[in-house]
Image (cartoon, rainbow, N blue to C red; front, side, top):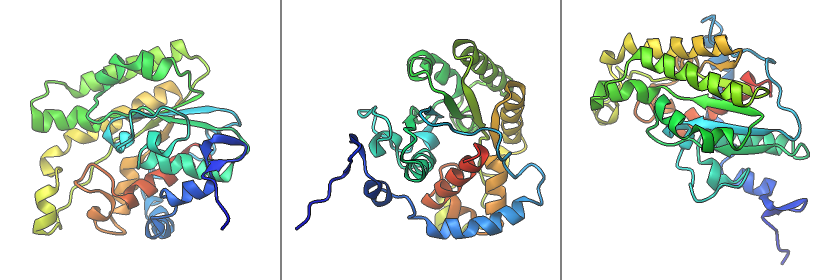
Amino acid sequence: MTQHSDSNPADPSQPSRRVFFASGVGVTAAAMAAIAAMEAAAAEENRAAPPAGKLHLEAGQTILFQGDSITDASRSTEHHEANSPLALGKGYAWLAASQLLVDRPEDGLQFFNRGISGNKVYQLAERWQEDCLEPKPDVLSILIGVNDYWAIAKHGYTGTLERYETDYRALVRRTKNALPAVRLVICEPFVLRNPGADEKVAKTWAVDDTWFPDFDGYCFAAKKVANEAGATFVPFQSMFDAAAKIAPPERWLVDGVHPTPDGSALMAQWWLKAVGA
C-alpha cells in the first residue's frame, strides 16, 4: 500500500494540501453557495462591499492575525510555527490562510495567529511587543472590539467607547512607528440580534436590543481608526447584516458574537476580498 506523507515535499515542516483540505477547507460549502446572494443584498448597503484591490499579498510575506476569541478560535498556544493548523485555530484566520496556501503554494507566505480569547484593546497593547512587533509582520490584521463593549454590558467593565477609540488609535500609531512598512488590515467588530430565535437558541444568545445603539459606536470607531491609518477595512458587521437576510442569524453566529463554521467561512471570504486575494 502506498504511504502518503502529510508533509510538503518542498518543506517537510509544512502540512500538505491534503492536510489543508482534511482540516476544514471547503467544509462549509453551504455558506459558500450563499455568498453570491449575500453580496447582492450587501450591494444595497453602500458600505457593505469590501474595497477590492487595496492591498495585495506579495510572495514571501508574513501575515499576522490579532484579536480576541473570534480570531483565537481555539488555537493551540503550544504551537507557534507558521502555517500550522493547530497554531492558526479553527476560525476565519485558518480558513483564509489555508485558502491562500492552497492557491499559492510557491509563494512562501507565512501565516501566524496571536488572537487571545477575551482580549480588549488595552490587553492587546500589554502584549504587543512580544506578540506583534517582534514577529515583524508585513501584513497585520486586527479584529478587536466586541469585548470592549460586552464587558461593559455584562461584566462591570468600566471602559468607554472613547477609551476604545483612543487606545486603538494609540496601538496603531505604536505599530506604524515600530514597523513603518507594515500594511494594516482593520476588521469591523460585529454582533447580531436574533428576535426570531426559538426558545432553545434564545437561551444562549448573548446579544439583545440593549446593545444598541451603543455597540454601533464601536463599529464606527474601528472604521474611523482604519481610515485615519490608511488601513484596509473589512466590514464584517455589514457582511453579517446582509447574511442575516439570507439565512437566520444562528446560521452564522453561535450566540450573537462567535461565528459558526458557516460564519467563519463567510469571514474568510470577505477578508480575502478586502486584501485583494
